[in-house]
Image (cartoon, rainbow over all chains, first blue to last red; front, side, top):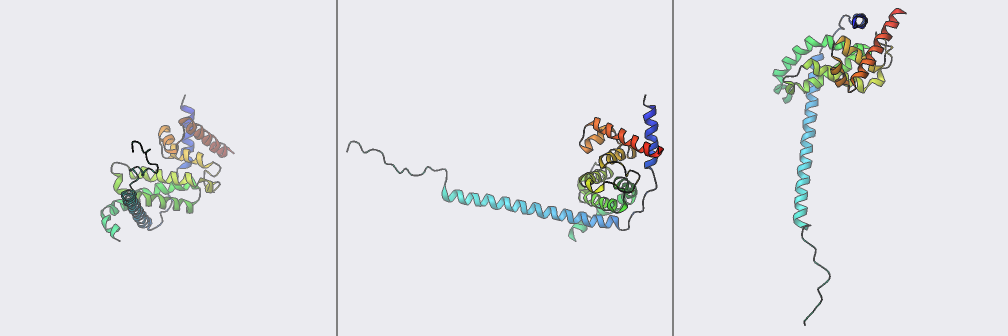
Length: 84
Length: 140
């Protein structure tokens, strides 16, 4: 059953085969330099991200300790004055 | 240049890998794009990513990783690569990807489907269509 597709595929496979093209000189060195740049950029980006996160955390703590949003605001209405 | 010094050990390995695999990878890239200059650019980009990833490769095959990067980059920029002058000039970018991965690289249908993010049936259909298109062209 798979005989005919196999033969067709073999023909196409033969079409795809061919001599390897010439490798440009300095391909490895160029790729390594570019890869290094990529790594350095990623590392810098990660460092900036952590710095921003840390700064945000510090800012939040400072703001929270100054304004204390968890304590209830003083009520503007006084309780009725009874038994005076 | 500190980063280069840190990685000098892996640079030797990387250079050996490129010396061994670049010919075949460039052939794959030329089959995909149909033109040598974009193929060279694609391969250089994929190899740079492989080098950046070199220390985390561990058990993975660098050839597979580079081919994966190459195919992803090609798929992302496929709209630029319609036409061309290669053997596969008449095929769409997707058909070229499937044909090269399935028949030239000899990947299984499931692996090709997973790599290209499409169902197995679609891989089969694309491959069959590409094969019959090529054979029709040969016959003509």
